[in-house]
Image 1 (spheres, rainbow, N blue to C red):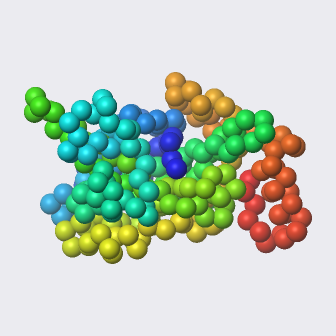
Image 2 (image 1 turned 180 degrees about the vertical axis):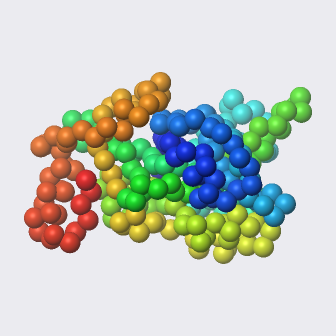
Image 3 (image 1 turned 120 degrees about the horizontal axis):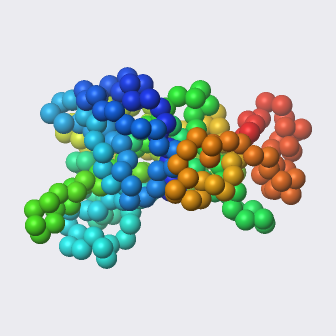
Length: 246
């Protein structure tokens, strides 16, 4: 799953990576949580456009958002069939810029957070869905969710699911809902290559949403009792060519 992310890449670099026509200026965010605004890129009148929306998709048919389940993630395997995501998969696909995301691994000592980001230090794009909910008074609210898939080998040591990450050569196909049907779009929803991401253990400061600064990315040493630490050491001893998580 994906329940917390960061967008710290400068606005100009984000714009260059996604090639949208807008020129938004936004601050670095290190600890973006559900219900907060997230950046998205979508197709409008043949052009890529930048939009902010609420993280937590509310389908257009919902009568009372307050009593509706918060949908921050959508399973890639079933989104096309689920009532909450079916229409969005057909008509409202988007890209969600992220510099990285956070995931927690269960250990005997508690949950250990990890900062997970591209190995090359660049920005990445999550496959996303969005929809517009209209309240009885006529106000509109755009909201969205991140598509997730079963983890690749690197991520499976931390969590069994991960966001779907799309490469730039897939952006046009994913966003083009007018000409690319759901069946073709689903073929793009698969785990990213094992060596695309790296995971860094960090402190529990990330657990509190109010901690939204660069210091939460500072690495920490894993306990010798940590299963993650033991696994990494074992893989390094047995095969020098194996991926080193840290």
